[in-house]
Length: 245
Length: 347
Image 1 (cartoon, rainbow over the protein chains, first blue to last red):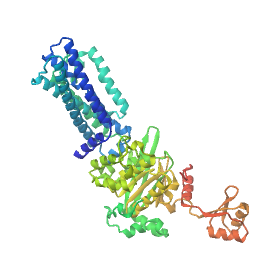
Image 2 (cartoon, rainbow over the protein chains, first blue to last red):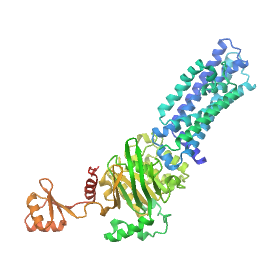
Image 3 (cartoon, each protein chain N blue to C red):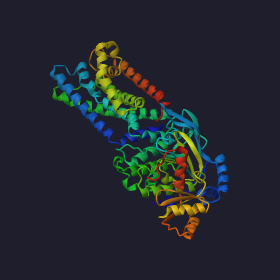
Image 4 (cartoon, rainbow over the protein chains, first blue to last red):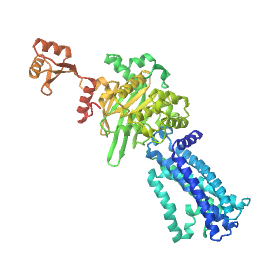
């Protein structure tokens, strides 16, 4: 299994896609945090309060969507480019490949998440100073939100790899997943908030302590998102068992 | 392009105990005694068929892509898997290597399904689609396979050299020609130094020198004791190299056997002459069957080029060309007879 995970990481490293997505993640995180701090301060929010820190840092997960995309490319991309043939000639059983992909995508998500957390911290620190505040970096609030962003990205990596295994059409699965996260789920949330908070994006927002009302607690959010990841991975393992490559 | 030490001498195969004399002896092209060949072939079929396909069936919607396909590919031979496009070749090969699940039937390689081989890459090398990520270099593609299969990365340079891609190994595959992709696919197949090679239309996109090179390699592989199964819809590419042929049409195997046993058993001679009618007459008078093909060509069966030439000379018939019908033509004739469609005689 270690060899398969290393091979999956090698596949990701040897194309340019990952670097483009990493750059996009860094850029989006920096802009989102800077915008949140400046916007919050201009609106008169007390930025050193718990609400202020949450407002500033919950967007540190803004780049996780790129990890989701990368995970989907890791799985569905194999069919787009026909490399699934070589993958399954090397490893005829389906589940070890899916497991290796999910594990590799989770590890990459961790790395992306840590980069995002680092950038979010540095940008927030700087933006706080510019606005005349001090980021309460010694407090547990900052750490818990940034830790949440790392877990968020890791779980999104796993979900992406699982979705890309379930739906092998790369463009279709990416468009579908983004449409769900950015549009469909928001509609459900506005129509039925009690259900909406249990949906993936809502659970993710709870995980990074989004200051909006009506979300789950951070730990519950983490568990719900992890449950989604586990469910998608399980579905992917089952669905792929008997399908032709 | 390839010298003897790029591929190490192949060890005795795991199916065991066959001597190199027999491996050489069972090559049909090395001996003219068909009864000896069939003896060998009998024994091979019983104990040395590395690839055994039995009653494989697969339906896609309303299309029965494979309909009870059965054949063998014996050790140390090149088996040609021939059929028109859409006849079911790729579907069968994909089932053989576990990429597609058959509706019924079994496909065994060294007595196991592909999926149950302990180390598939070092036992079987397959070229199926020759598709790669356009943004990845050839060397990196090979690295990924070597890593996943646990193959020593030092093999990478060796196989790149083997297929003459060393100079282009660090370029992205997106810039490769079709022929270069085919050669990269062969390099991937050779990475694990496998005893069984399964090649689906491997000469697609290869230039004529590339096709000739591939033919030599297939011959070498078989001589080294490897099992080669090669599919093609272009008869001319494989007729010179295959020992056995399996002809598939509309999902069914319509003929399987040694190359010599396929096709019309009577020898045929083709003569080009401005006096086609006269030649046909004298040939018939000599007791042969003669059929005019076009204005200036006669096909004569039941004779040999030497006999036809002698009779033509004796009767004052001017000959412009005299040739025996080649293996690929005989094969094509057999194919036509068996399936009623045409298979490309040349690329």
